[in-house]
Image 1 (spheres, rainbow, N blue to C red):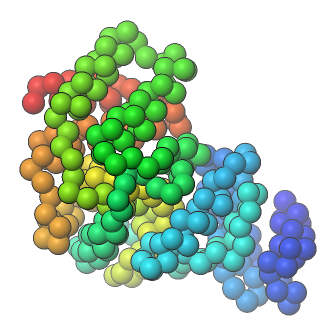
Image 2: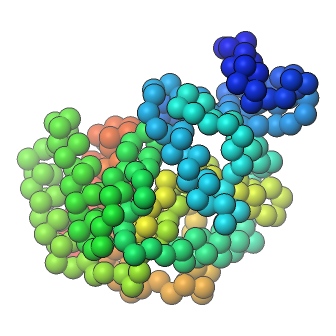
Length: 289
């Protein structure tokens, strides 16, 4: 494999002719993408290689290009096609996130969320793992959420025959509840889309980079529910975020629950139908409120 990588990188003139590969190791293999550490005598890189051909890597390249005005969320790309993507390597440690890093993340996430648009969605579809996110522009958040997230993934789940009659009934009822209760946010805001611990690179006392974005314009509190669900941060994060950008009462009373449904649908499709149990628990919780 290393010999093939070596030939491709030099054949395409991605690496300098005076560079020699000294270290090449697999960091992760998930959702049809291998993420590798590549070190030459001149530089360190991250090389992503695609197991299943789609637009996942070119899409990632385009997102990083769009995020270049927010350096904490962007990476340098040296080469990218549908098969491989050679990108900047960021030095990082594997430590728990401390108070200072929580503050940095909250402050920078507010900057990201302050990037606005006239519509919800994005100028192209993006990916969570290798799962497509339908980002066709929509000027109504409730419509976008229900049609391009809730219905979109629910139909995929139904096609796999994962649903019991009881859960199917509950999901129909929840859709009606969302349509009746979900309020429109003031403006669409840009969200990272995959904010969890492994995508936050830290070095010493600082945050080096927040990687692997799955962006779209949304109600930015959708991202706060995603963070809560994944246990990315604790109470201190929400206090600091709220200091810079007030969190609505509706978030804590309603949106924190309904917004978790979509990631759980995505995990059901990416990983296992076991996540449907968590969806059912959330629906029961919503019904009690």
